[in-house]
Image 1 (cartoon, one colour):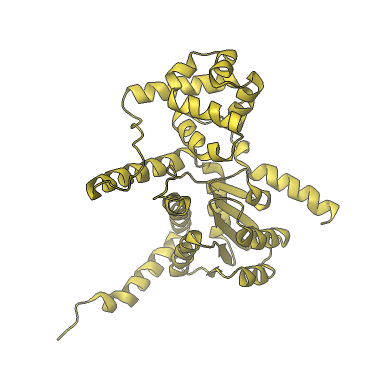
Image 2 (spheres, rainbow, N blue to C red; image 1 turned 60 degrees about the horizontal axis):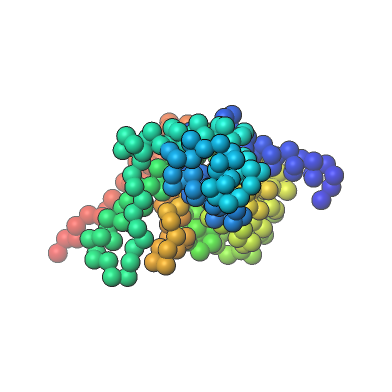
Length: 315
């Protein structure tokens, strides 16, 4: 990589990170941020994050020293955790905790339900899944950086070509995005085969868009084609639950997703799909809004073309 590319890489990486927000997360976004970031934190930082999430009212009354003592960590760890969650310092985190506590007391924040058990009746499974899905969507919406979302929509709107990368469960979301864009007249492609993804990424250039979907942010088969597209000058977008992971190094625009609590019967691949689809829908609707004069007729034409396949068969 040349020095010029390295310098450009560094500038684009910093600009694309969630830390470029104009202000710290609000109370609702704090809860989402903790759920999203905790799995990638150190154990000591996890203790701080989980403590403030479980008892925002109590922690809001503690000094930085008091919270360090309660969590068995250090003041430096408390401050680092505050910054990782998006706050300039612990004072800002305390203000958000007080706001979150007020929301919970008013009933705005639902209590966290237990994990699904092997012997749960199906009615309980429905209730727990519905609660987790709602919480996941609310967390994702609260933490989504709308500045980067708007920029991503702008890039997609004017794109000559859109390549979407995702493997495993994320490949289903990638195919969904591709199908949506195709129906409003865009040249869009999803590449579940990693070799094909890399070889087609080589053909991208300025004016094209590469969209990567990976919950872990570390999926090599998704990162590699995104890196190639990035180096070729395409605008790159990453939809991920781990904005601090490697995928962020090659993304002009990072869109962070949240997930429900992982459990034996609800792995990350299952819970991440819900939030990924929300972000994909936001991107698509944003593009359709900006291209309404052509998108609306294209959607109508696609519906009409398939209408006969949904009509009752004549005997």
